[in-house]
Image 1 (cartoon, rainbow, N blue to C red):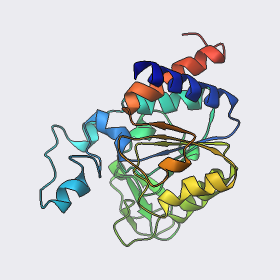
Image 2 (image 1 turned 180 degrees about the vertical axis):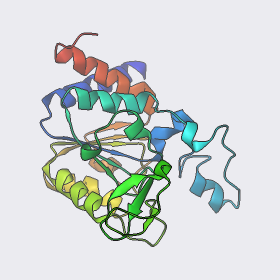
Image 3 (image 1 turned 45 degrees about the vertical axis):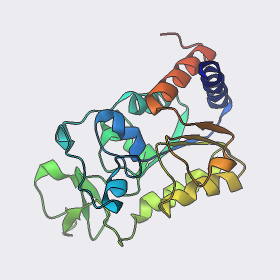
Length: 235
C-alpha cells in the first residue's frame, strides 16, 4: 500500500509539473489538521447533527487556529507560479493566513474575519470595528447562511477559472453542496484532469484521474516537494 501511495504521489507531482492552469478546490477537510471540525467525517458537524449529537467542543478558539501542512503546500504552489486560482468552501481564514493572494481566492461561503458591504459588496476586516462602508452601505457578516445566495463575484470567478483549468484538484471536500460542487463538473467538461484528495467518498470518484483516501498532510506536501525537484527548485 505504501508503494502504491508513493506511485500516486509521483503521478500527482507529474500532473502538477505538466499543468498550465491549475485550480484547487478546498473544503472543511483541509482544516481538520489545524483542529477544526469537518462536516461529513465520522465526527463531522453534519454527521453528529444527524445523530442528534452536539458538535464536539474545540480545544482552541477559531481565531487562534493556524494553517497546517495542506494550506502551506497550496501556498507553495502559488509561490512557484503554479496555482492559477483557489476556490474554497471554508470560512476559517486559513488560506489567507497561509499567504494566498486574495486576488487568486474565491471564498464561496464567506470569511468569518470579514464584513461585507450590502451596497457595493466590498469586504473589510471585522477587526476594524466599522459598521458602515466608505460608500455608505451597511457592513454585515460575509459568512453565507443556509438559504442565502453565494457572493456573486466569487461564484462567477469560480466558474470562469474552473472552465479554464487543465488540472482540477479537490482537497478535503465531499462535493455534495451545490453550486460549489458544480465546479469539478465544469472542469471536466472543459477537458481538465481531476484529482481528489479526501477521506470519504464523493459523487465524482468515478470521474477522477487520481484518487487519494489518505490524509491531506500525507499527500499534498510530498507531491509539492517532488514537484520542486522536477522544476529544479531544491530546498
